[in-house]
View 1 (cartoon, rainbow, N blue to C red):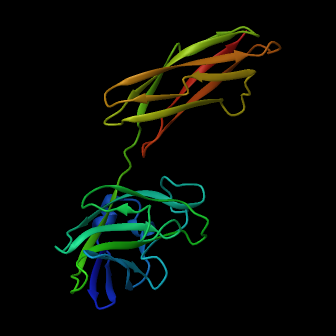
View 2 (spheres, rainbow, N blue to C red):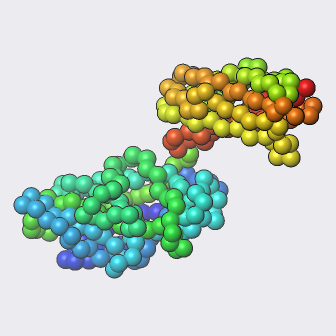
View 3 (tube, rainbow, N blue to C red):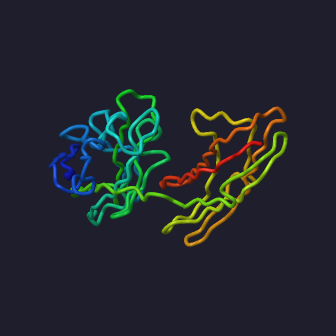
Amino acid sequence: MIILLIVETSLIIFFVAVSSLGRQAFPSLALSFHLQPGCSTLTAIMVSSTANNRTFEYSCSGSGALRMPPTGFGGPADCCGADSIMVSPSFTLPQDYLSLSLVNTELSSCTKQPQIHLQNGQNITLGGSTLNPAGLSYDYCAVIAGQTGSVEGFSIVWNSVPWPGLCCKLSASPPQLTIPAGQNASSTITVTALRNFFGSVSLTGSAKAGQPPQGGLGFTPATVIVKPGGLNTTTLTVIILNDAVPQTWTLIVYIYPNRYYTGDTINILVKVT
């Protein structure tokens, strides 16, 4: 998707051409399913000025310049809103442009924060939850040097970026617990970072569907931090009720990273005697 913005007095002409960029980055999903132009002609409104610069907000006469339709096209999606996608803008700003940003029209505007500052080639995440049944919308904000004078146009290409994949790998020692009724046992869970992941990881667990446990569980600590090439550990403790009957069930351990990555799972066999 190529978006050309050309300022002429109070109007920005918004040309859209479907290119192979989005399709190449998402072979099975066209980027246009997730990120769409809001109109063919954007209106530029100067929303603030100082002694040194002017700030313009580019929208579709009150509606969003970029739209993200509701969930339903697949991909890593939030519950109630637009699919979360990673994209990378490619652009070269004219000399008098000081900055270019996006704002979520539900949360912000060009005169307040938060704003998503755009840098050429830098990955950003768009999408997420919204109460608007039409999905999310974004406007452009540009800070331009000087109080007067003409403003040059620019072009921006939105490239889709694949998700990074797994953050970490899980392992358990021991991978099987034998626990008498009324007792407890522990297993050491090791979280090993993959690739360049650096961040915190939360852990939780539950019995496999159709296999109700006869007790409870906990992690100490429940959150660990891992660095690229490193690992960290937490202790899983499973407590069995006094009146538990002998049975064997599977405990699934999940991890939830704090970034764009997805989490691993591991199964632990619990035998109650």
